[in-house]
Length: 122
Length: 438
Image (cartoon, rainbow over all chains, first blue to last red; front, side, top):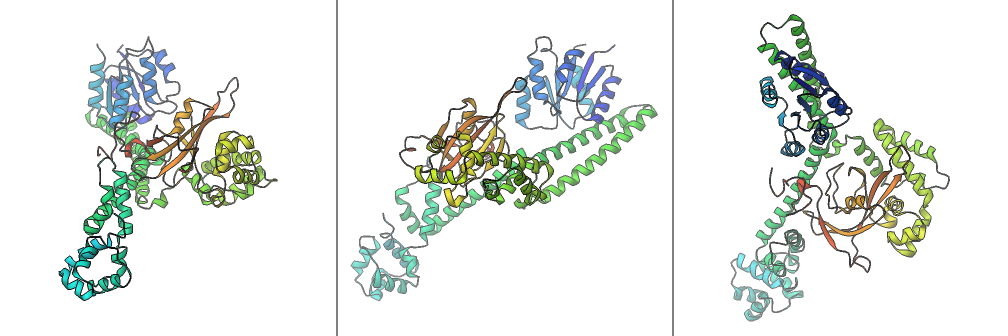
C-alpha cells in the first residue's frame, strides 16, 4: 500500500484528474471537497501529505493550514497548496501559515507529481 | 503679496509679451513712465480708468489684469501644494508664480487635477478588482475550468493504454469543463464590456441596496410617521424595491426594519427639536434623547440633508466588512472590505461602548478634513447558544473647528492600502500601487 495523500479540493473534475495521476503513481488517494469539516477528515485520515485548495466552501485553505500547523499531532504533515490566486500577498499568506509548497492553478500534472514525490519521504 | 498688488506683475508680463516698451505703454495710457514703473513693480495700487486704458492698449480684457484667470488657477495651485506639503512649495509666493508664469502654473494645476482624476479611476477599478464578488467568482470559475481541462487532457495524451472506461470519463469531463469555461468567459466579457460605464457597475446585492437607499437620500418619510409599521417596509420593497434582486431586497428590508425601530426610539420631530436647541453634537443629543450613540448615529444619517446638513455613516461588522455606507463628500469608502485600518471605526471594535472622536484627513484627497465619531455596540444580544453580534458605527460630519473639536488630534488615514501613499504606515497590509507602482 502506498503512502496516503489527502486531496481537499471542491472541483470534482480536478479531484478526478489529480486522484488519477497520483493513484497511477502508487499513492493511496483520499478526497474531501469542503472546508467546513476538513479538519475532522485530516485527523481521521492522518495522511502523509495533504493537497489543499486555497478557496474552499465553508473554510479557506489558509485557515485550515493554520489549524494543521497548530495541531501537535498533524503539525509536521507536508501541505501542498493549490490556488487560483497567484498574487504575492496570497503566497506570503500561505508561507506565513506554514505551507510546504505553493502551486498556482492551472498546474501541470508533472509538476504536481514531482511536488508530491519531493514532499513525502519514501 | 495680495492679489490686487499682483495686477502690476500681470501688466508687466503682458507688455513684455506684446513687445511694447514701458515708455510707449505709459504714453499711450496717458501716464508717466515712472508711475507705470511703480505700478508694474506692484508698488502702486491701480484701478478705474488707468486700468481700463492699460488693458485697452495691451489689447486684453480688464478682468484679465485685475483678477487674471488666476483665481481658479491659484486655488488649484494651493490644492496641489497642500497635497504635497512635504515638498516645501513656496506658498507665500504662489500668486507671484501664477502671475509671472501663467502657462507653467496652469500646466501644474492641470496636471494635479488630472492626477487626482486618475487616482480616483484607479481607486474605483482597484476596489472593483479586489472586492467585486462577481469578478472574483467569474475568474475563479474560469481558472478552475482551465485547470481541470489541462490536467485531464494531459492524462488523455500522456497515459499509454488508458482503459476505455477512463477515456470516456475524461472525455466527458473535458466536455463539461469546456462548457463551463465558455460560459465563464462569455460572462466575463459581458461584464468587462460594461466596465467603462461606472453607472452600470451595480452588481452585488450590497451595491443594489445602497443605490436603492441613495435614491431616497437615505431618508424615508413613510417610516417616520407615528403609525408606520413593518407593512410600510413591505410596501417600499414591493414598490420602489421591486426591481432589486431578491438578495438585495432582503438586505434592504433588514435596513428599513431597523430604520423603523430607530424612528420609533427617536422620532424625527423630537430629534430636530433637540438639534435646534443643542446643535449637531451627537454626545449631547444622545444624552438628552436617551438613545444610545449607535442609534443616534443611524438617526442622524436618516435625516433629510436640508435639515441637518451633510452626514455620512459607515457600519462594519466584527470582521471589518462594511455593511452600510452612506457616502460623505471628502471621505472615500471602499465597497465592502479592505478599508484603512487606521479608521476609528475599526479601533472601536476593540473597545466596545467606548466612543472615539477624531478629525480625519484622507491621504491623496486634497486638504479637506472631516470629523469622525465612532462607537462599537452590540446589535444582537448573546444567548447560551449564540454569541453577541457586534457592529461598529462611524458618523462623519463636516469638520467644524469649535470648542469641542479644537483639542481633537488630526489623523491621516487612507481609503485602502492599495491606493494609499501614506509613508511608513504601521498598519499597511500591502504595497501601494500609487507610491510603489504595479
